[in-house]
Length: 376
Image 1 (tube, rainbow, N blue to C red):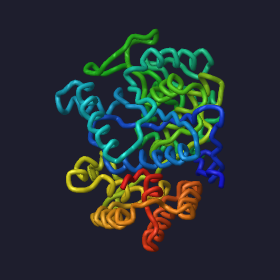
Image 2 (image 1 turned 90 degrees about the horizontal axis):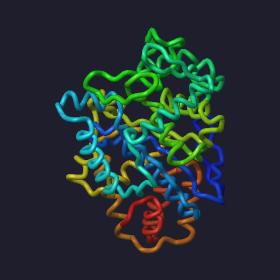
Image 3 (image 1 turned 180 degrees about the vertical axis):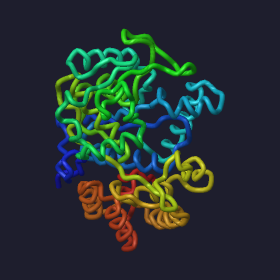
Image 4 (image 1 turned 180 degrees about the horizontal axis):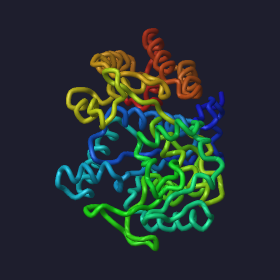
């Protein structure tokens, strides 16, 4: 069976055809390290981990880059609030994130570059965009001119009104008087007095959020990526803007396949730092087996929004105990069924159900669980 995945831009489940003559190139947007890893982060990165494990199972080498956004407004605001240097805050939270990912048995990334490491790359990247006529300087900032890029909007497939609404909600500053178009987005802008600043020909300042990932992806993986992922809240504006500026700079396709994980809710609201309704992984790990945490998350389909409830981990721990009671080798028939489920847009709920049925019938769960990243 061909591996099939939902492509956000094409709005359909389509074959994902990994290259056979080189590694699969993946980029997943990582954390802004100003707070602990929450369940939403974990769900996103576990979805890509399951995909990577299946690709490895198919015989592919995977190079996955997951960035660290250590130059960004939320990080500076939290450091300001705590009275600490932003890089000290970032280093501590990045270390906590790594401990959480290791506990959840997430495979190490090929590279985890920090945005702060890419300032020379970003300056050069912006120069390429300006030279190709896709950006302009105004009010000490550099903006991407969306009118110069006819394909703007083709990742999200949103209409202009929806894009404006999301841009307004997600820091797009649509009312910036220096913009020619409310949807134009910043590539470089002046820093606040207590923020880091770097010199450029456009004046001192710091990069915008979107340009950081484009520059890192180009530096770490090259012009075209096989698969780019992140949470669904990154579709617009982040990934839309990434695609536009990357293709504007290089003249080549940026991403072959766009993949996004659904958002998780709690108490009827999207789980987010701004709402303060988060479930933190390091807190869960104090009382629960990380394997059960991983099971409780990955039993949900990555594209289906779901809501946290306090009984989830208890149910996962009971399932873990059942699987561990039959952790011998898994039969070829069951392994084929689990692989077929994963090849059908990472249908982990069906994969879990197959293993549950196999365990109930006395079959071994070990190999199948391992393919899902659960070492019994």
